[in-house]
Image (cartoon, rainbow, N blue to C red; front, side, top):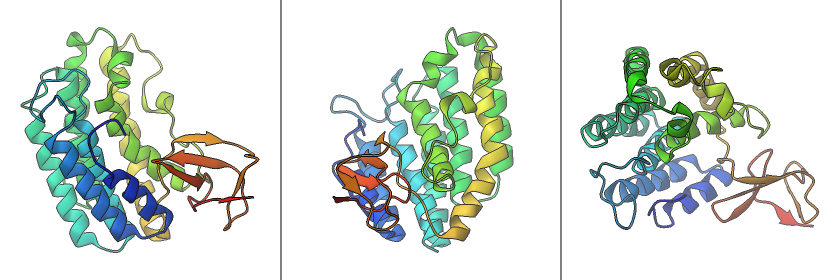
Length: 255
């Protein structure tokens, strides 16, 4: 990660690899609080920031809620979801570009969904409208879609999706957005449509399976050095200083 989360994110990924999902939720929560307090060494959480680094703290809150859901702790998931939605709403008064405020509305919906809270559908509807209203202020929607704030809003969905796709990228950047970047509002609003269509069922499936994959970092197929002791794969995922199996997120072993 690029923000100042200490080593809590690394510990969260290690806990995911160990299938210790409540521990992962705790670590993601601590990473969120630390990142929200100090997104960058020279930046506070309420500073207007075109990149939106503070979004990574919200990403951690959403992911922590998902971890608690998988761990069978819906009470803690609800707390993290409520916190994430409240923080995202508060940050709408700090980040000043309409596209950023729309993205924060998208993250409000994500937090409510991850926490198993009511009001998700309405929150996504508001986000889609906010993107369409922001269109006049957006010159290059592809630029905004690649900033840390927007990447943070995409990561939990992508992590849940790869949990059901044998570790592959199941929802790519292109899948999230419209096919025509010249239609600025619709290009960004398509993120919300994709989430409304796919995120709820994906969350329910990982909760039912009791498995949440580690996030995808740098990957390599048919690695000559490492092998998964669980499934035997030599497809590798390097993430948060860990070398994990790309297929099942188990820590790999040297051959």
